[in-house]
Structure formats: structure tokens, C-alpha cells
Image (tube, rainbow, N blue to C red; front, side):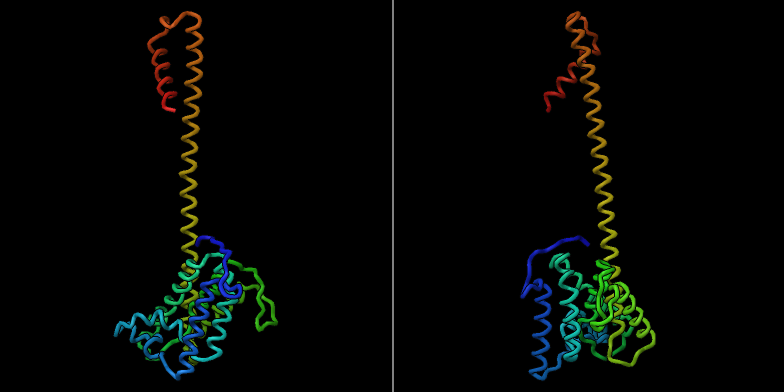
Amino acid sequence: MNGYRGSYSGYGGVPPVVATLLLANIAIFLFEMLGRLDFSGLFGLVPILVWSRLFIWQLFTYMFLHGGFWHIFMNMFILWMFGSELERDWGGREFLKYYIICGIGAGLFNVAFQPHSYIPIVGASGAIYGLLVAYAMMYPNRTVYIYFLFPVPVKYMVIGLAAIEFISSMAGSASNVAHFAHLGGMLVGFVYLKSDWRLASIKAKVAAFFYKKKIEKQWQEREKEEKLMEEVDLILDKINRVGYDKLTRQEKKILEDASQKLSKK
């Protein structure tokens, strides 16, 4: 992933993409709650409908629905807390791309492991868990406070969360928490960042290789020019001593070649 840094900010110092995501999620939640509406059947992620009836849009829309106040509060709090710095470092476009990829990837992961489920999945948690992975990879030793009390490096917190989600998903937890989606968001985020960084490393190495070849070629050409000019100096000395007519055919050719090269500069 490229290291873009942005100096812009959105609402109250929050970068624009994070601010827009916060407003969109909160607005949809309030619209549902105040209107006593339930969009989860159509816009939540229902695994069996995604592949049997091709409700593909659910892989995107489920990220903007939430099941209750604490559900949306925790997701939006983490989005603000960890996403803001990531967006400032990456830039809005790259941050939004990563967020959506993690969210859709989390949904696909859940569909793959629970393909016959009719239970709607809602929430941005898959994308949020992807953000936590990114934060841990970008700033592994940054200290976070669990329950605002216990300091721990963020890399260990995220490793602990991954272990909990893995155990919960394998144990078939009876709760309403979408452990497969959480685990999927983390895995997709990790693979995306690793592959992106590896690609950036490969690009850098290829660029360095061709730059080195270019420099080597320039030095070789410079050495040839210096050698040619040394020969020209010797020939000019000979002309001063005995005249042009005493030059050999090879010496005249060297002068001609040197004249042509100088005229091209």
C-alpha cells in the first residue's frame, strides 16, 4: 500500500471519508429506529440469498445496517479512533478502498462458511476488524487501553481478538455475533496489505534495477567518450607536428567519428 499522507480534515478534525462513513451509518440507523423499519431482510447479508437468488448488493449494503445502539456505537467509535489516523496516512481513496474490500471480503467469508443460513447479518464489524489489522500492521507497538484501563501494544490486542474470533467460529457459538465475518475481515485485510506491500517492494526493486542499468550505461558511454577524446588529443598533437596529410586512415576516421558525436550534442 502506498504511503500517502493527507493534511486535510473533515468535520471537527475527522478526515472526510471517516466522517462520511460515520454520518452515513448513523443516519441509516436513526432512519430505521425512528421509522420502526427493518431493512435487514433485503439489505442485510442473508448468505443463502446471496448465491441462490443473487442478492449480490447485500455484500455491500449490510455494512451500513446495525442491530442496536451498542452495536453501532462500538463500530463507529473504533472507526473514528483507528480509521482517522489510517486515512490521514493513506489518503481518502486508498482508505475507502481498503474499508470496502474488508467489508465485502468479510461478507463473502461468511457466505462461504454458512452458505445455507437464512439469518441476516448486519454491521460494519467485518470492515472494522480489517481496520484493526491495518492499524496493528502500521503501528504495531502503539499502546491502546483495553476498557480504558489496561495498556497493551495494539499488535497483541489484535492477535488476541483474532484468536477469540477463530475459537468462537470453530466452536459454533450460539450468539448473534458473526464470528466468521469478523475473522474474514481480518484475514482479507491482512492478505491485502501483505500483497500490496510486497507488490510495492517488487516495483521498487524493479525500478532500482533499471535505474542501476541506466547509470551503468551512462558511465560506459562517458568512459568511451573520455577514451575517444584522449585519442583525439593525441591525433591533434600529431597534426601540429607533421600535418593532417600524415595521418593514417584509422586516425582520420577517429576524428570524423568524434566530430559527428560532438555535433549531435
